[in-house]
Length: 306
Image (cartoon, rainbow, N blue to C red):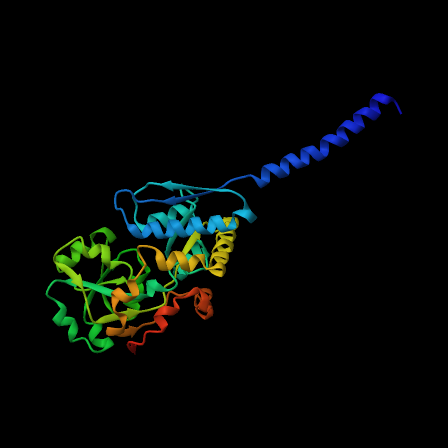
């Protein structure tokens, strides 16, 4: 065999492993970008919790999945529009929102309840001077005579309606004004939500006596085809749950710290209702105790079921 041909074969043999190594190294250092919606006009301190939790999941999963980049997208839009953009793979890769059968059909859910079930414990904002009216509510039927306000694109609206409540819906940013103008009389909020809202107006207060409860996990959702991102986030969240960093963030974040005591759940009458929008897969998660808020279960307020 001619020497020049031997040299050529040896050279190619040396270059092929280098070529493969180069491709493998590129794959290992590829960056996962996660685009999320950030409201700059309607600043909501709650969004900081979900962003921190997403960052925690990405950090925990970095040794296995590689580096990442979180990119805020400042577009003002209602919740329904955010979901549509993720579904169509336009501008956004992820949304955090309360689940429903329809949402799990259109998007890929990451089946970890981000608030450990806190979203399902509802206390109400009412108008100043109306507490005496709510002191008379002693049954679920009496509760159903109260006109409730909810967001027009929130799953809660349908949940309450299907349970027989009277609901007036409107744009989320206008609900407090609608309450003040007596368009409805009771604005149920998850127990971590009303505290900032109560500071916005002098004519609204926290209702002191009632607690409405239903299962309503809030998940991260991604596009149906983005299974890699969904798997990565779930992997990272599971690691955070197992090593305690999930609970550390949850119990010490400014929007959740101390809210159980502040809501005085032990002094409230609890009315538990069914969530007809809960998928079988979401319902099955209720048996995984490490995913839910056990502190609330230690409190035993008077409970009435629908």
